[in-house]
Image (cartoon, rainbow, N blue to C red; front, side, top):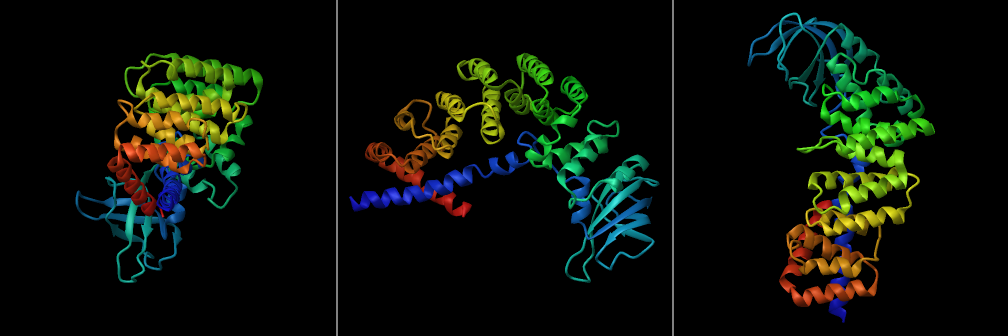
Length: 387
C-alpha cells in the first residue's frame, strides 16, 4: 500500500510538470496571436533591443567583405563606440551601393570587442514608417492603431512588419480594436492569392472579432465559405480561419465543424489539427460557447490516434475527469501504442484525483509494467527539463 502511494504521489508530481511543460508552447502563442507562426522580431523590437541604431547609406560592399556605410543619422548609441561618419560592418543581408539601411548594433561588454551589426534595407517611405513607429513603452492599443493602417501596405517591409506587430500583441489588446478593424478589406485579404498564406491565420481571427451583429453574421458566412473550399494540401493559417469562425458563429458553428471534421473519420488530419488549435484558443479567449460543449468536441479527438495524445493532455489541463475509463482503454487499443500517446495516458491517470484513475493506472502497471515504467521515466525527464 505504501509503495502504491509512493508511485501515486511521484506520478502526480510528474504529470503536473508534464501538463505545464507540454502546454507551455501553447500558452505564449495564445497570449499573443495563437495562429501566427514563425514570428520574427518587428522593426520596433529590433530598434529597442539594439545598443546602436543608425540610418546609413551603402558606399561599397562585396560578398564576404564588410560593407562600408556613410552614417546619415544616429538614432541610438549607448555603446560609445560608433561615433563616426563612416563605418565598415559585416551585415546579414546583401546590399548595393546607394542603398539605404537601418543598422542595428549589439555591443559586447568587452569594450575592445567589435559591435555585432544587422541591417534592414529601407527606402524613404519605409524609413519614415520605422522612425514613426511607436515605442514598446506606449500603450498597446495606441501602438496597434498605428500599425493597423499598414496591414497589407503596398510596401512589403511595412506590410510584413505591421503583421508582426499584430502577431506579437496580446490577444485582448487586438480584440479591443474590434470596432476599428476594416472587415471588408480583411475579407478581401483572405481570398487574395498575393497575400502570404501565413498571414491569413491572423486575418481569419480578426474577421471573427466583429461586434456589430450584421457584420458578425456576414463574416461568419464568409468564413464558412472559406472553410468549405476544397483543399489538396496543408492550409497555412486555416486554424485562424476556424478560430475566427468559432468567434463569429458560436455554438451552431461548432456543431457544424464537429460534423465536418470530428465526426468524419475521413477528414484530413491537417484540418483536424487546425480545429484542435482553434478549440484550445476558444477555450481560453472565446465567449458564448459553454466550456462543457467545448469539452465534448475535445473528447471526440480521442477517436483520432494521430491527435489523441495532445487531446488527452488538454483534457487533463481542463480537468475533465469524466473520461477516465475511456482514456485508460486507449492504452491497449490498436493504433495508440506510440510513446507520446502512452505517456499522455499515464499522465492523465496520474493527475486525475478520482479513485478509479488510480485503479486504472495500477491495472496498466500489472498488464505492462515495463511500458508504464518507461512512460513514467520519460515523464520524469520531461518534468525535470521543464523545471
